[in-house]
Length: 258
Image 1: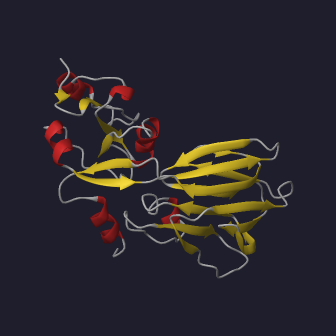
Image 2: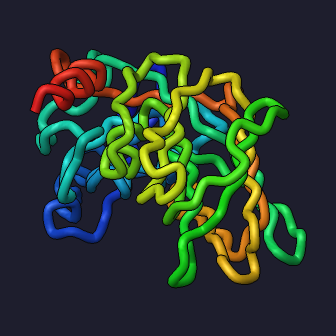
C-alpha cells in the first residue's frame, strides 16, 4: 500500500537515468508510487538539471519538491538518503522560486512561450558574434551589444549558467534579475546589470540572417529568433524543500566565499 501524507497526498519519485538515481525501486516498494500529477510531495532523484523536469511538469500546482542528489552537481539537491522521507519532507526548510516567462519570436514570426526556473538565454548559432539591442520597460538601454550571447537569470538560477558567465549570485528572496553577457566584445568591459524583478526585458536580434540566434528557456530551445521578451511570472511559485540547516539561502551565501 502506498504511504500517504496526511494532508499533502502521495510521495512521487521521478528519477533520472543515472545509476544512483535509479535506486528508488526499494523506496517505491516502501512508500508506493503514484502519477506525477497526483503528487502531494515530489522527491526528485537526480541532479539540478533533472529537477527542472518535475518542477515544470507541476508548475501550476503548489507541490513541494525535495531533491536528492544523484547527479553531478546537485546545488539545489539534498544528500541522498531515503530513510523517513515523509518526516524529512514535512520538516524541511522551504524556499519559493519564481520563474521567468519568455516570449520568443522566430524568423517566420511565430511566438513561442515558455517558463524558465533558471534563466532565459540567447546564444549565437553561427561562427560570428551576435548583435543585440536591449530594451528595459520600453526604454532602449543598449543600442548594440556584440557578444556570444546574453541571459536573464532568476535568483534560483543565478548559480547555474549565469555564474559560469561571471554573473552575480543572487539571494533566493531577492526581487532582482541578473542580466549577464557571454564573451562581450562591445562594450568590451560591460559587466551586466541587476534589474528589478518587475522589469520587462526585451532583446532584439540585429542582423539575424547573417548572425543567427537561438533562445533557450531551461532547455526549451527556439532557433532563429528575432526578438525575445522576458518578465517574471508571479502567478507561478515553485516550492523547494531542503534538509534542516541546509537551506538554499545558506548555500548561496557559502558559494560566494569559495
